[in-house]
Length: 191
Image (tube, rainbow, N blue to C red):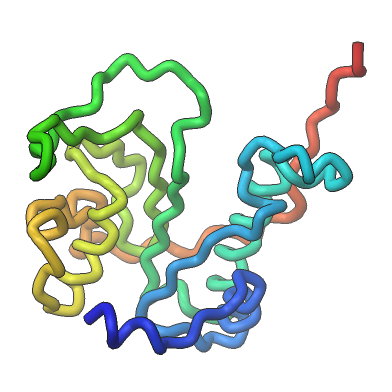
């Protein structure tokens, strides 16, 4: 499977909104924010770009991707997972669970601090806060289950499939109203 995926086209994150607005997305898209909208703290070379590290800028980029999907008419058949790759530096009162032992040194492998995951779509459970242990691998497991594909390895075979986040018997939720520019909060004056 890895060899099959290596030759597949990869596009810039800007292409996603173009294709979504045209209603022409593949069955599965993984979209990563460009560096300036990643919401990560600035690197030393980013001093001249005020967008880097600006959470409002990153949030607006994400809203724009969802809006493009809605405007392209894809909402009725779409599930959107919005997640982050780190915990943001906030204290987490829940210890990450141990998952397995590493093969070489038999030390525990465990998840890191929790990160949020927002689930959007016409069949996403409204107001649901999941109590199931999900990981980024759960997104892969969701795709495998949806398309009837076998797991790639033991880790995704054991992962939750995000099904608790959906209710396919509910009336489909309408698309979110198009969000305009993110509200800008006043920044404190430099001291």
